[in-house]
Amino acid sequence: MKKRVILAGLAASALAVGLVACAPAADSGSGGGSAAGEGGLIGVAMPTKSSERWIQDGDALKAQLEDAGYTVDLQYAEDDIPTQVNQIENMVTKGAVALIVASIDGTTLTNVLGDAASADIPVIAYDRLLRDTDAVSYYATFDNFLVGQQQAWSVLNGLGLTELDGTEIAGAPAGPFNIELFAGSLDDNNAFFFFNGAMDVLQPYIDKGTLVVKSGQTAIEQVATLRWDGETAQSRMEDILTSQYSDGTKVNAVLSPYDGISRGIISALTDAGYAVGTDFPIISGQDAELDSVKAINNGEQYATIFKDTRDLAKKAVEMTVAVINGDTPDVNNTTDYDNGVKVVPSFLLEPVTVVKSNITSVLIDSGYWTDAEING
Ligand code: BGC
Image 1: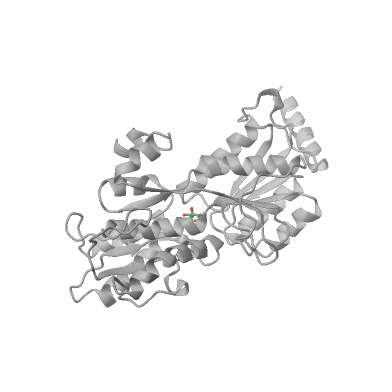
Image 2: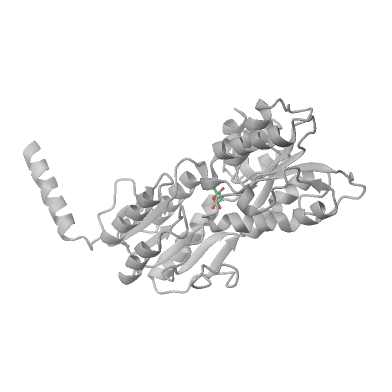
């Protein structure tokens, strides 16, 4: 009995090796009943599991693609570029009918995506633009410039200068407020959109002296954080506190582009003696990660930008299925996302600013996090 199973297994794998162009059968996790897997294999390449959002993106994509009748090869590359290249190469070899890719470094996949194009496999860029390639058909993302504006408005709101939508508050304090700036990873196209959006809002306040960047570091190259790494941000914040604020002056606000970076900044501030309720700065964020939502509740972080990964997955699945079927997907932006080779037709979803007062209505009522997860 046992032997037969092994032989059958060997025969099945021999068949699989011989028929690489065929989609593998549906795995046991598919929920699409008899239709599961019939649409073929879709490769989903995600950057890392070290940030919650990509796990949620991957889970949502897998579930929705399986419901639509596809088999899914979902891979995470732990922020290692050669690993991601290999994973995508494997998806091409296995005969994927489409690829959905959230890159680590949007410029490093040109060759492997060229292989996908040669095999007529359509590629959807997911959240992050794929650069320097014509092998990308469509792009599903959020309005990234608006994300940056919202981050800056949240900082201004925390300082009492504007509403969360940027409307100026009458009789707002004159400042000056000390602010330090952080940006994301320079190999991620989104980092530029976030930072440009934020500076579009903050620069006029810096110009009129309401905001002061004591470190003088205002160029994206000076404030960037490779791989969006929280520890890297923490040590830059520590350096800034030592070099600029050891004379007793206080940093009043920190522009942070991502919750993981915000947590590094919070650690540096806490270690330096800043305390909630007395002198803790206003800090922005992005992604509504659970620990950061808790940090908003306890006053360490002021705001985050929520981008519902379920909606993004839905949009990417719609696009992918349309392309596979030879239909034209719905897009709402055909001007802003030039990847160096072509302007990629895009669908931009709308991000939402979350502060303490709307955690329940935005995050709990929508089922993104439960009350127990946040408050339990
Ligand atoms: C995403 C953000 C995320 C960041 C770090 C960006 O490309 O758009 O949502 O915070 O990467 O993972």
